[in-house]
Every structure is written in structure tokens, then in C-alpha cells.
Length: 318
Image (cartoon, rainbow, N blue to C red; front, side, top):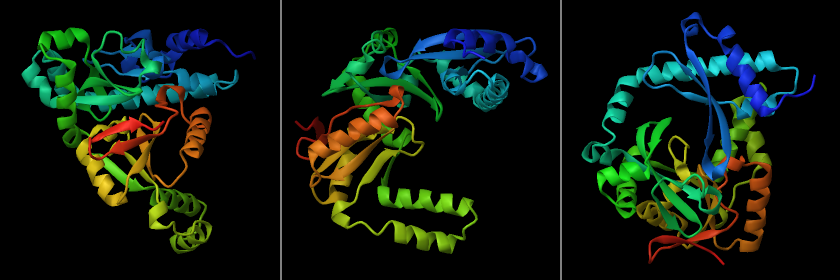
């Protein structure tokens, strides 16, 4: 069986999805939605309106990538389950979300919910067209109203005009709110990798004690001056923006006890490494990882950055 196009796939999902959903969705309105997302990637979503105020969008591109022409039924089961799970989670916070949306034009009600995201500037020219943003080197900072860990509302130029504030004010507010709404997470990469390896070994039936011994043999301790760290936020979503928080970066400077490079590994996290590593080798690694392991919509940069502790800002290393 030949693989259908993404448009045909989405149309078929929309026409058949009710056969896979619980009966409470039998009168739901099914629509498809195509949006420009991060890095100007186009995302294909399905919306199932079932008398809820907040209706989640489930993006189908990942399912299409796994579609091989013969597994459509299994993918439909997964799509239906994912939608019901997301819809159920959304219902619990629906009243709060409705109140936030109803208050969007009220700046005083929204100012403590303003957060930011860090994106690649050149890769998001279409996405930022109708939105306020702040340019920082190769990056753009965009602004959003936080609803919960999975939901936020992009701030548009129209909303900013109604609020009668500037993008500079949005930037200051988002940084001030950052640690309260999306607190940072700074982890030793060695510990993270060791933990992941141990969990995989334990899943195979190995005891925790044996797994610890095996990991120790496979991954000898790294000297403190060569350690690498992961900087993100607690929910690991759009955590690269943590590098904009000068207080956090000053704390990292104390931990590293020297200047350091910032590797923008994705929009969700950055890697902090000592400056003793060679810049050219790091950039080569970044490009390879971006091409092979990072989704196009989640790529942040191919370049190396550093933190200027005196100016309290990041800059691209040339």
C-alpha cells in the first residue's frame, strides 16, 4: 500500500476519528488546523470541539512520520487515546483558563503571567510577524501568557497595543516572572547520563547495585574542571530561555568558577561547558546533533555562546 500524503492522512484521520473515540464525542465538531510553529515549521493539527471552552489541538505530523502505509489503524488508536487524555487534562483547569482568556485585555490581570521563549531569529521570521519580540544576538525572545505547564497564549501586537506597553517592558516582566513561574533546573550532565543508563539496565532485570557497578565501570568520574551541565526549567519546556536570567547565570558562574560556553542544544535546554574545550570542535558537534537528533521545530542555533559576567549578558563567540 502506497503511503498517502500528509494532507490526505490528516483528512482521513478527521473523517474516521469518531470511530475510535468514546461515545461522548459522537456529536463533536472535527476540524483540521495548519499553523506556523517554531522555526517557521508548518504543523498539521486536529481539533475536536465537544462543548469544552478550551479545546486542545493534537498535532498529527509525528504520527504521519511513523505511518508506513500499513499501520493506520494502530496510529488511529494512539491518536484517539492521546486526544482523550489531553482533553481530560484540559477540563480540570478549564475554569481557570476561561478566566484568563476573558481577562486577556486586562494588563494588570495578566502582567504576573507573562513569560518568554527563546527562539532562533532567522528561522522564525514568519512566526514573529504579528508578535512583539526582542532581538538578542542571533535569537529572538517572544512573549506569552502562562496558563499552565502545557498551555500558554502568544502575545500579539494587538494585545500589546491594548495594554499600551512596549516590548522592552514585556522583556523585563517576563524575566522578573521567570523563576516564579518556570524555575530553572541546573543539572550535572554526568549524573543525568548515569541515571538514564542505570534505569535502562534495571529495566532489563539487573539489580540496582549491579547497575551502579556497571555504570561506574562504563563511565568513570569526570574531573570537576571538565564537567558539563544542562540548563533548562523544571518542566523541560522552552527551558533555553533560562540563559536570559542574569541571576541564574551569575550562580552558574560561581559553580563553574570560571567563564563558560553556552551550547544552545534546543529551545528546551542549553549545555554549559568549560571554556577549555575548543570552540570549533563544539560547533561541529552542535551541527551534527542538530541534524541528527533535534527536531527542526526545536533547533535553536548552530553556534557557540558565552556569558559576560561583567555585562551580565550572553554573546556569540566568533
